[in-house]
Length: 96
Image (cartoon, rainbow, N blue to C red; front, side):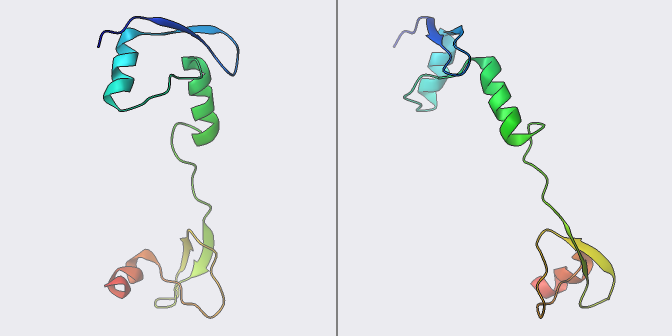
């Protein structure tokens, strides 16, 4: 199939942008059936809003005391009473 450049209107900012033939070919190769709704700038802004610096947001870490060695550590979940928490060094043998 032969593609030609298309002019589309961004659903966020209302500005016209070009959906190039090479982009259309790329979309088709990935199996995408819908045309982009946002211009490249609004797509980047939406991605930035969703992921921060382009990466997933950092997890909130919680302070805990390792049940094996007694050292202070941080874990990516909120410890609950009665459940042991292990530092990364002590968790490896427990995990196996």
